[in-house]
Amino acid sequence: MSAGAAFGQAWVRFLTNPWPWVGFVAVAFLATVAGSFVPFVGFLVTFAISVFFTPMLARAAYLDATTGRIGFSSFFDFARIGPAIGVAMLVLLGTLVGTLLLVLPGIVFGLAVTFAQPAVAHGRKPIEAIVDSVRIATSNFGQFSIAFLIQLGLSFVGLATFGLGFFAILPLTTLFTTAFYRQAVGY
Image (cartoon, rainbow, N blue to C red; front, side, top):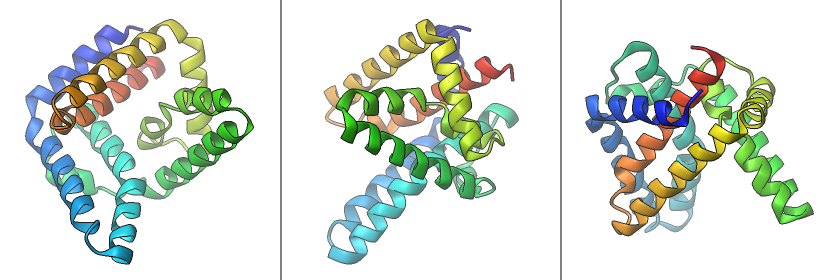
């Protein structure tokens, strides 16, 4: 397993068809900004986007990896949305409890469940996805650490461009996480 190879796969997938990815991130961003102008409705819109955004990106990355091409409608394939929301809530709960106990366990748990959404997109149940993610992160700790550092570097690039880089970096890191997961489980 190689973080570099996974990043290479993600880069090629993104460059092959960037516009649906950038468009989806832009729509989510604009909906969040628009929602901030209406107090209660804006909160609901922002909350819904935050709950659905990562699973929708993960599902599109799965479809991209398995079919070779996606369109804007691929982000709205809700075939695995129930388990994806379930895993999101479990990750939130685990990270919250870990952070309340001591900050470090929350951070460690948050990193260890990096692959939970790609696992759900590939058909795993929420608990299985979390267990798989922890197993992958711990059994491939060296490559996982390199992958984390690559994603951290990409995030700094996004910040250095005053946030504009995130329109490409969010999809790229999602594709990267999915490619790493697929390598780890042998897809």
